[in-house]
Length: 138
Image (cartoon, rainbow, N blue to C red; front, side, top):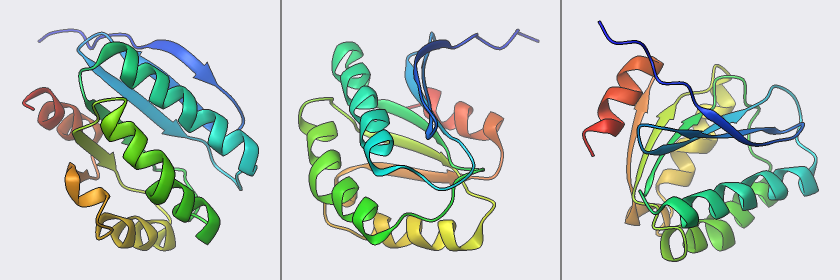
């Protein structure tokens, strides 16, 4: 059995952390608790920079500890950030480890129906190993 690869910390703040996995994808891990709007945008701008730098187009999003998106966060994420992540960052495939909070799961399923999100291939997982395995096949 192989040893799991060690991700390299790229950026971290109170909202979460961005890591570069040496297997060729970005890891975004949300922290527990409410998100400061400026820190939330800053975190995702660092995700965008790493996607653009590496151009592998794959991301593992760990939402297990995440609270639901506010309407403002969701609007900015889908209307501004996601189109940039697709065009500037080459974002194509997302493996989402689902939030424990049922309302956060619901917000994410609503987001997936947005036209900008439909340009991506997403899969939802409860298990990180399964999410990584799927992502590595993309």
